[in-house]
Image (tube, rainbow, N blue to C red):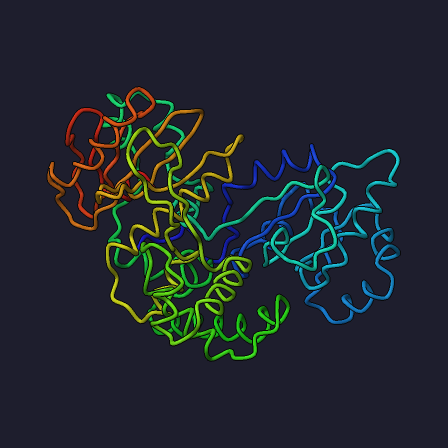
Length: 414
């Protein structure tokens, strides 16, 4: 594998500079993401937050204290960070009351972390609109695993003319890595950095699933049949990169589509599943409008599905990096996919400042010009708005496949 400079060190995160900006701008900063992505580590080790007292609602005594008198708890310190706030949904309304009454206003007064999408939870008292910035932390990118605190070079690709891309990607110093190994490690810090063999990673993933089913889910909603829910998780993990069809998923696991819809919403709310929306601008072609299904962490998905690494898993790995990069940009770019009713498809379409970058992912080591035909169709369809096309593959060579369409190894970009 590609080694970390020091597996025991705290790795810098690409989102850290944006956290600084948010602390200077908003009264409340909410860091969300799946459990074990490193939210608490980011907050507790961030230099700007070194003087903050840190509390966690995973601690029973702290949770009891909060529920006894939320406003008294919040006023006990001039600033504080609170982990796992989804465990007390009413706390958000109390935070709103406290920050609204604070004179003068304090920027960065509260820093919250949550392992659920608070904006999707029905029982959360308030979204803190106008008061809070929501920063989602994704699993470690490859560059973060290398200790670089970065994401892929997506911004540099947009800021360069396509004619410069060949030199740009070749100058990247990232070492090669077999994508089959990369997807099995995933991006959770423990299995991707700290655990050095497949057996210990499997044990870690088993523990993660058990904790998620038996504890995290209960905080979100009562699920009467955890076995059925786990079956749905496994079926979803086996449909990475496919159009999301609740009826077909229901047939796989022998559940009604209404139950599948409920369970998929829970996977969304807890940041386990990712629904990728289609590119919405129609220039005359009939486009597919159904979202595609991916997983937050591809290593967990592989373990859940018991699958052999395939091209769809490399595709998911690229998407994870794209979504982590998206969080570092302001305004945030859009990431979508493009597919027509005639079967023309591009894996990812990135929209940044009205420019489009089309990305296709192929696990093979030597893609041919025919593998870029849908990239060419997309670029022709959107004309001057299409900045260019990128074909990421599992080999080692970088070369042109056509005008503004470059084939390059995935590890040179990520």
